[in-house]
Image 1: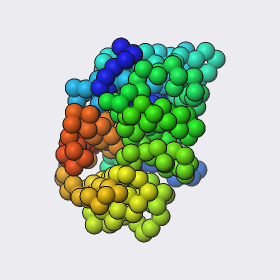
Image 2: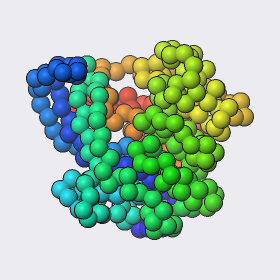
Image 3: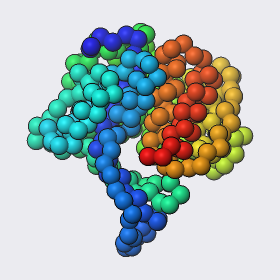
Length: 292
């Protein structure tokens, strides 16, 4: 399955998540009593690959896990969802990536990630997965692996004639080399501010203004603003908004990854950017309101 075409190819993170629910997130020095906890397989990359394959497209994951219990669980999760993981490397003597996410009563959360094996992604992984870099594939990147590794993967996809989508999360400074290789940038309101600066984003009009600023540096920029909706703008002057969908929030965990996976799957299926964003916004809203 290593020559999947067309396919969403995700280069990035795999984390074993520990989900903790409580009345609120603790402040510095504070201990709060939680109500429940459960494990989940995630990482932005893994979540996005699974979301894409659920849309009926081929999805392949390029990543790294350790030869430990967390790593084996992550591999099993990809297998169960039909993601091609033939290019997920298993490392001996390392620890798999993991995270702890603490949810409050409103469904919002804060998380700490330990990247572990994800930081080992690099040139060897790109070379081993060379068959996946093809003109009719879409590459998805995130900021949970080293910037240099993302650059290598993006260069390989651009050389092959494919498209590159960067979900610039978590927020960090982008190297000029990586920024120059991105076809579609997707960020939330906080990440948009980190990259482009500007005032707080609270309304759909402000979200659109931020997308237009970012489109000065990227061919297409998409800014998601949660309950305020989604906006996009292109370097050629095309722009638009997708209004929010009202839901009763159960959990916001993974909503951004669902958005990315569905958006790229719909682009692969031939949708224009606005249609892909409408579908992605609905999928993310469904996830946020789903009892999990």
